[in-house]
Image 1 (cartoon, rainbow, N blue to C red):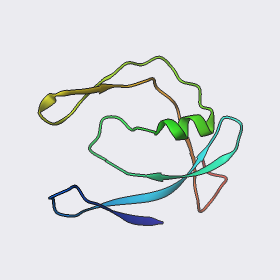
Image 2 (cartoon, one colour; image 1 turned 90 degrees about the vertical axis):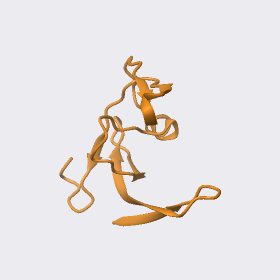
Image 3 (cartoon, rainbow, N blue to C red; image 1 turned 60 degrees about the vertical axis):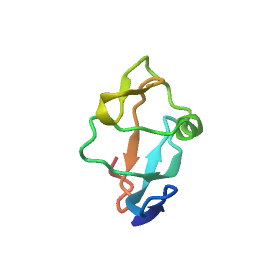
Image 4 (cartoon, rainbow, N blue to C red; image 1 turned 90 degrees about the horizontal axis):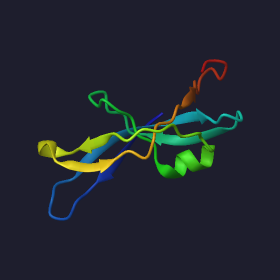
Length: 94
């Protein structure tokens, strides 16, 4: 299921971001519904701290410098995690 989320910044035109609802499986086997903002051109994928905490995901050491527009340093990652997704049409597929 896809969904469009309007995003507006003061004084700017509206931008619509396509999102999808996904099922994420915790290490304990619990399934959590989350919203995904796909970006096929990105080199990394990101999860919110809230999702990491909800799923109680183990974090591996990783400190990757995140660069913004014009290669300006913006932030550093807090670590790396692994996510398992469940197929919403066929739950036996992960």
